[in-house]
Length: 344
Image 1 (cartoon, rainbow, N blue to C red):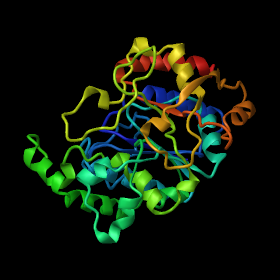
Image 2: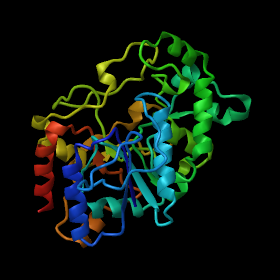
Image 3: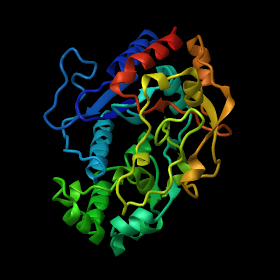
């Protein structure tokens, strides 16, 4: 199993991940996972770091909101595929943290041949920012949007290769609207690959898998618990369809949790079994993926055997969240305390 970290450089959640992997090793999981990181080119982790030696070699510069994010994801996936033992992967950022112990994640992902990829129909960004040619007609017909954070089987990882990425990159570069953004952008973005508002990472996996005709093999949901806007205990703020022609709005960003936000109530929601549309991919719209917490929460099992049973994915069940974001540096000690308490 490959853990793919798409990061800038240092990973502030490292103490949480160290606790996660230390517990995994103690429970007999050593050799069943491998860590891959994609920090900025030229960056290297110190020998004392959990992530020392995990940097992929073929790194690329990454600009938030640009097509280069999808390129970095693709290179992480390609690097993991070089190891024939890699049969599952899960993608996360430096602000992502595990909600469950290793055996729960491992058994959950291996208990199904399906990948977990949020996917719904929308043509908004394609019509504005992407200009696919006649030879790429399927990309227009099967354009999808989802969340960047996915969990993939090896079969589906192999479909997200450099050729598929290049199709996205060229279509964006040729878009007249993208050219307008480049002329109007006051920042350092001078090239098509650096143009903001592309957000290819939210389309790359879902659309590519749709083009390959494997949507029936997907669970149309992200494995990562995400809310948007300012955190409100009375309920999540839903993310309306983005109007990419308007200025950036604060509610576009995923919620960043403060230490005081990390309560049992929040974690019960994130760890609980959830209800969402049972329709196959793609879903009709973004609202169809909003999951309503149920009263029953998946308890952490005391033994490895129980953990494997309770964390198994069943097709008649709604999927569980396996990860959560965003946990910033100042919230790490509070979350780590909660995580360790649940391991004991």
